[in-house]
Image 1 (cartoon, helix red, strand yellow):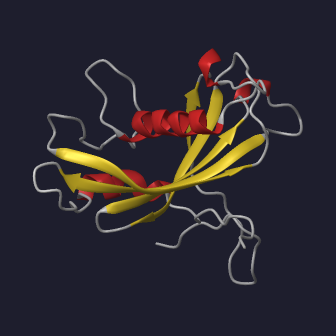
Image 2 (tube, rainbow, N blue to C red):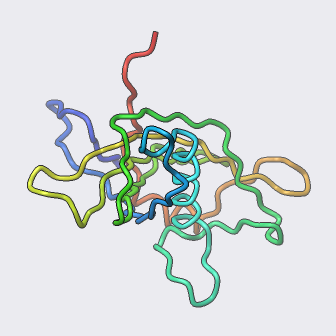
Length: 177
């Protein structure tokens, strides 16, 4: 299946936006630092909250997106471990009452890992004609691991089926030295 592109078009590839999850994440007053914007360490917690809501199976009676198929937690026998995470801060995140719109997709699906891509955006409710402000971009490599043996677990067919529609180009970060 061809993967949608998010970068500039080439002669052989039209631009199509990947399908994205939109996870509303409210800010807490404690997420702010002395400069009155969301602290860089708080950003990791916001991304974690979005990831759990988007991918872990819900409890009975809870709503969840169609991507919430991961069995995880203390009784599941499965761990989801972060192997790598990178964040590019684009603009300070001011405190606001409406939840941030954390947009998520997959840069790749591996044998036992997933590359989760994020854009942390201003609330959808306050987007004007110019659209939403992007505050940060992030990528996390999540590895599925057997809790007893510590060995990687292969992604299941159900997980691949749920996540494949959200495959898109991975984030390309600004130049590094």
